[in-house]
Length: 115
Image (cartoon, rainbow, N blue to C red):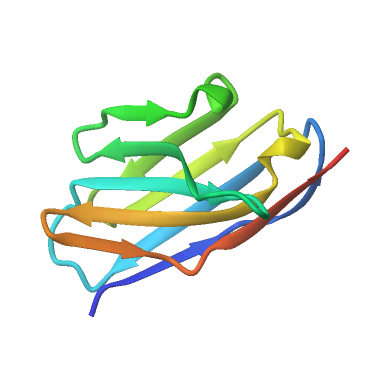
C-alpha cells in the first residue's frame, strides 16, 4: 500500500527557514512527479513546486528564488527548502506523488510564519 508522509513543518518568524521532507513508501519504482502544494485558510490548495524523476522543476512564481525542491529517486523522497519565509507562506503543506494513474497525497504539515 502506498503511503506518503510529510515532516518538518512548524512555526517560524518572517525571514526564517524551514525544510520540509516527504517519503513515499510501498512503491517499487522511481515516481515520475513529486511535489509540494499548500492550502491557506479559506483558500484553495495551490501548487508550490514539483520535480520529475529527471530533475525538471516547476515553481510557483511567488516562491521562486526562495524555495528549492530536491529529491532522492532511489528513496522516493522529496524535500522543500523554504528560505526567506513570509507570513503569506503560512498554510498546510501537502506532498503529492504522481505516476501514471497513481496520485497520492500526504496528510499535510502545518507551516506558520509570524510577522
